[in-house]
Amino acid sequence: MDAAAAVVAEEPRLHYLNESYGVRSWLLTTDHKRVGLLYLISLTGAFFVGGFFAVMLRLELLTPAGDLLQAETYNKFFTMHGVIMVFFFLIPSIPAALGNFVLPLMIGARDVAFPRLNLASWYLYVLGASFTTYAVVSGGVDTGWTFYTPYSTMSSTTQVMPTAIGVFIVGFSSILTGLNFIVTIHRMRAPGLTWFRLPLFVWSLYATSLIQILATPVLAITVMLLGLERVLRVGIFDPALGGDPVLFQHLFWFYSHPAVYIMILPGMGVISEVVPCFARKRIFGYRYVAFSSIAIAVFGFLVWGHHLFVAGQSVYAAMVFSLLSYLVAIPSAVKVFNWTATLHKGTIEFRTPLLYALGFIGLFTIGGLTGLFLASLGMDVHVTDTYFRSAGGCTPRAGGGSRRSSSSSAST
Image: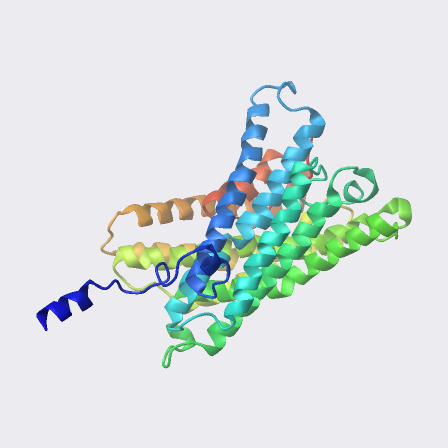
């Protein structure tokens, strides 16, 4: 009996890594942890490709002369860096990778609500990335990551269509992920796990999923209209064909500003878990932190017009968007103050996760404050398309995020 017990004890415990082996078992898996790892591997590849373009841009900017990249190549590298980093890394990074891995664990579910749909979303991501990769290796695209018209319609002779198709397809991956998460949170919580007992990371994923479902279809429609105009020469956005380029900006930023919060809300959720853990106390103002995630998602749909302050929109509309852009700072500030209050008089253990969290809070606060300057009509006119705006959008997003993102196209 002792020998039999020893044999049983030596048998390895089955888990998601050793349950089955082989490439086929991974490519056909419906395990949420494995799908999360598939996303992580794909996202890491996209990060290095986009990072390569960023390194080349910085090397070029070491000297004033165009001695490494010519103007046309610089524009292509600028665009491909933005497209890859925004659509194929930043937006899907935390929700698709970390969210897939830990969401069912945090709510006591065996898996997400639709496991096969979850795997299908990864395949859509890979398919969209394949189209964009083709555009990269076949000459690139030079319109700027925002695809502003008329750059992206009749003016550009680069690979606009393959890039647009890639973005169009990866948008469906985002929609399916958001749908899966919302149904999972609503229907698969463990008994007794009420809404106000949920981990704050789950609240942030819920708010993120709402944005993914409601905003991403607008991007898909916009890109589709762009393709129709480019192929069929139908006047939608190009003024040479009777279109309205400002209409494109309205449609694009109606998605792309909420997309800023797809990037930052899951990160905020992580910080809301790390800070109480290493302060050895409960989060200060749990309900306020939870509802602030929903408030950020809601406000995200109301402030897209601040990207059009210099685009010729109505002055009265600009004033409304300016006011709303100031208001969106309130729920973000609620989070920062509650994180700080949680640390106050806590039994703080300065280990690596908390140090990263503190760095996040500092970067996010500095970057978020630039949003207040940019919400001002008089200030925004002067700093649009400058490094001030780029710093407000990109630098904090490396460790957190901000309430504004650069809308400038590539410059020579």
